[in-house]
Length: 445
Image (cartoon, rainbow, N blue to C red; front, side, top):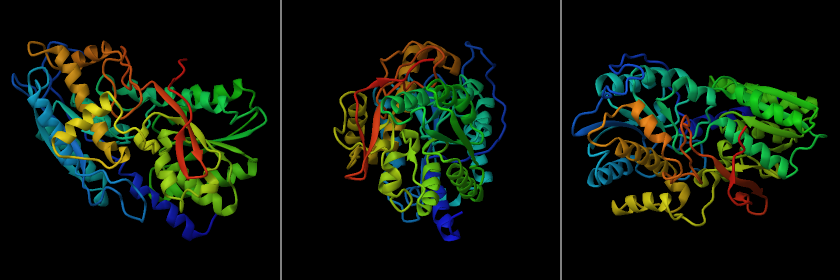
């Protein structure tokens, strides 16, 4: 294991990236809408209004401190208010105006009890129809909203297995993100095409405990490696349940992989798992080639060499689907959905220096535009509830695109519509990641 001081520095990664993955726990509530009843109006819906909750971030603590370089996200409250104002001026949600409820999250004062309060406040006190979340990680917290028949639109960059979507359907949606399995299929295709993994390689896979990551390994990663003739596969658990287990299990992964001669590493875990791994492994001169895609937070890796040494990132390859997280600054805003959302904010005198500064703003815009597209289809005379939203979403296809990600395709039974990405490679010369291919569909099973 590395010196204690180094582990302490790497453990600090938890603070900054926890802003991307807020941890909540269970707070069971009872809802009034019967399961599967398409004729019963959802909570928070009247003849003229729909109540929508938003979890926003306190700007002064969103970066988490610790000396990390992170793109400022601006005043998220103002961004939400701009979206709500725009929607209400442009037909509302199927003719009904949004009544918004904003609750600010202070990441410096996180606690289980404090996070429990969000579900209780939104579902019991405010009785919202939908809530826009910021990357809550715990399945139990999402179950809380499901139990209250509250629609969840997750705007945080947290990879979720299809098993999670299946357990929460039709209440949980991620308009800006793919499920972990399609993403992993796209990742493995790019790794193979780039010659990153060959039969002779010894491959290590870091798998976070819980959250469906094991399912993605069992159904996608392992079968693909075996089909490609890889004989040596070593797995290591990554326990994100506490600050102490983060560093401890990352250190164990480094030691186990070194002992097994692993020369290629794939991550199925929260984005900061890479930082824990590199900040522990690099000082020991252990630098296998890494698979890094959007869910591994490429820009954060490139911007923070103290935890992600450049030599540890050399040769990194992956698949990128969300330019703001991948660190792609050129061409902002892209024509289409990104420009539309950009113009909404511009109309409210909100500007962004780069695409990465607009990451949260664009994922929030995706969530609100999803509500508008589906409820507009239901119409003023229709019944607004989550089951009718599910039916409306299944018919959207590619007509509703993502402002944050590269391509969306809504089909029946799809709750995470992002279905394509681009090859992502680390450029050693400038210490950044860049796209190295045209748009590629994630392979289907």
